[in-house]
Image (cartoon, rainbow, N blue to C red; front, side, top):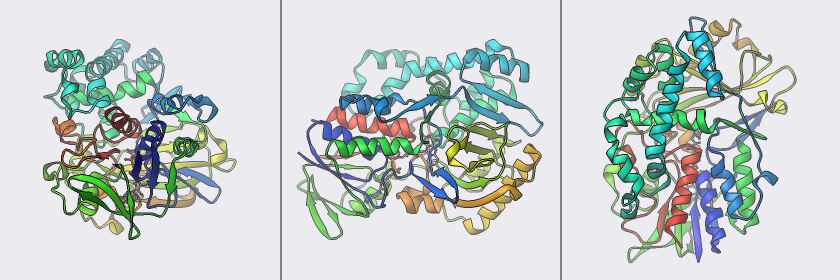
Length: 484
Ligand SMILES: Cc1cc2nc3c(=O)[nH]c(=O)nc-3n(C[C@H](O)[C@H](O)[C@H](O)COP(=O)(O)OP(=O)(O)OC[C@H]3O[C@@H](n4cnc5c(N)ncnc54)[C@H](O)[C@@H]3O)c2cc1C
């Protein structure tokens, strides 16, 4: 069978490996001159930066690809578990380390916030319980096939619906269990892992801390880009053909069957097509004559981000790989984002890979990936917004770290929602496809297959089960499971 794949994002790469392992002849067309989409990297002066994702959880979904191919993942891709998952900072001087070890994390919250250790353990257990009840069905299976719903797992979850916080917000559920305002804010932050708003998104999303605090946060050797590189190389070893600087302009459909792809005016015939392009643009650009699922395409988008990549000529011993500097008014920060604006006291995330890979920065320096969650691009004047956010971010970090950060910046690059869209064709620059604020959001994502067009499949952050590296990998796995 000849399989054509549109896009080499992480889901496109994983799909390519899986299709090649079924014995198919696979060709991947990619607009850029590099693989990985959002999961790419670049160098600036003497600094190396991962361009997009920085947090790596559920590494077994990467390992699985090598194991399926009969290879030992450790021969090609290595990673280490982080002892400290995140360093949290508040304006009043409070600093808290979220340790991977649950007991150590609980004791830290007791020491720093005077919250009884058993309360933190209870919050994490609750996250685990929700994941155990729903995770396998909602993330690992197609929600759009009858056989998914005829299982014991689903029956168990349905009976427990009243206890899953589907009808209250993440914030309300966290206020009930975590109670302490700083702990509530800390757990509310997990909404941003799929670009949602904790004051709107259902409490069921409190399964997200389970990924980080039970399964763990990992650091890939060589940085996040090693995920792309290792899967890309695996795909090539399995015979996948990559064509770069090759934008697909159309999916040709004949008699309700996906037949071929038009690339640079040439028609390439395939027996199966897998589309890793954002679902909105896939319908609007590649399938303009086909009836589009308007209700799905009109879903509100997840948040986007403004990223400042700064080469910093100083070492900060108080910082780790992942660091959060919280806003003083989290509710208002999200309200402003809902209104399409960026709060002037934003929560700032800093990722520093040189903490683990010293060669990512020159001696005595650090590579700071500084990210602020912002609304998707709905026509804001980013030329005006970016300098304002940059100033507010610098002021906040300088205040909280007690040093003039601006004069430490040796080199700088900026990524904004408009550039995210132009580099990866992600509608409005959303990081994770549609937002998960609606309690029915999981069902309002596009299925991994077309109901109308035979032999057309979809993978990646804008379709089921959603954005983020592990979920993108799962979308490829679902296609694998439902095809020959
Ligand atoms: C700044 C940022 C931070 C993030 N942080 C995290 C994080 O910490 N952890 C995490 O798990 N996730 C994170 N994410 C989300 C994660 O990066 C995405 O969910 C994931 O990488 C999306 O992969 P994808 O397979 O959907 O494809 P994408 O990465 O969106 O790539 C799609 C590819 O398809 C190509 N393409 C599109 N249209 C065509 C066409 N017509 N013809 C040919 N090629 C085409 C594009 O050029 C692109 O290469 C972050 C994202 C960003 C941008």
